[in-house]
Length: 435
Ligand code: CMC
Image (tube, rainbow, N blue to C red; front, side):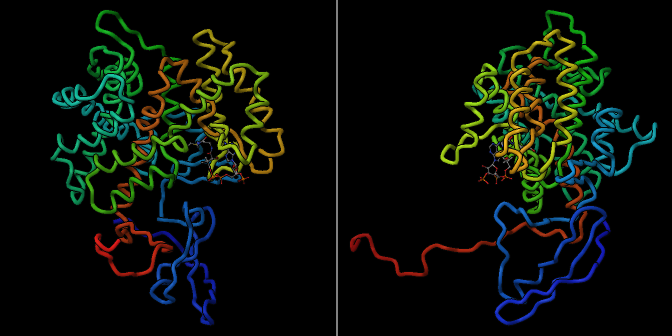
């Protein structure tokens, strides 16, 4: 079991209906202090109201820290910039799961454990064949990842530490295989088995883009770029999909089902689907001279249109992941000889115009990770429909680390928010004949 690290730092007094209630205050190691309202309903018969959880800390966590005002993102205390520059995705997986960077021996053991699980049950190939060829890869991923629980019964007992570990390794190892299979299926090409002499990301590129008829050589620049993209997406604190995984897991659901729930949540355009939406928007804008028209639409309160890839619930500064993503974007376009990519030109011009516009400045709307990721992923050869599946692949380790942490938390309870009811008060049923 995990030990609580929060420290008491005093209390606040809430006066309600002429009575006073003491709310204990706690601090963590970084970020705002919290007021403990756990006993409030029992003591004062009142709920707190916080749609979208904008002021609510739902758990205690050691994994990821974000300072949205300063634009800081830390995994286990290490800044995302340093990890993106010096680490690799598999090492980041270890860090997120175990809390520390691995020694050489620990890394070799972890690498072996993950690589051992890259293949999927052969029957899963049949499962894929049940989908239409034009099914969205995220629809396929929701289905096949959920289906893993029907194939790996020996790692679904959440109370068994070893089973939890095997399920974690299986999920991290099999996500690239499943994502590549989803792509191959949509293309009508044969599935490519993993080749365990390759690294994690190289293996994924080969399973995705190689065909049996031709030799395939992994381009190291492109592999490094994709590996960095995976690092940037690996975890992001209590975002919508992670909270979904925790909520699903809080009922005792098995890990494969929980990750499938996370994938479903990630699919939405306000979350993981934004990179697809951002690229579509840049393509739709088409030329730099049309940017003002789109900026005007985004600012119009009577128009639902938003600039995809702009704004963030937590970052009220430049998203630190967006900076690293922009670097990778330029590297990939240079490598494939597309320095003059017209979409990149529009993105750079749009970013500049929006960052100087009062509407965006006042609301602290900056480019987020998705602004440049679509251009980069398209340059790597992925169709837009695969973008969110790649996000899911990378985020799986974050979801698992958070799920595991939740299960080891002695304060863990089934998640059960309350509501402020505004429906009809109790009334008598009228039989159909009398209506
Ligand atoms: N374009 C134009 N206006 C915007 C945008 C945008 N992209 N984002 C927010 N606003 C405005 C919004 O209309 C509101 O204005 P007003 O105060 O006049 O009503 C104000 O900014 C605050 O917006 P909000 O909806 O209250 O902010 P939120 O924290 O609930 O939403 C968001 C965050 C990410 C859902 C939102 O910024 C958005 O829809 N962005 C576009 C989609 C996107 O890029 N999502 C990817 C997020 S990063 C990837 C991830 O971590 O999942």
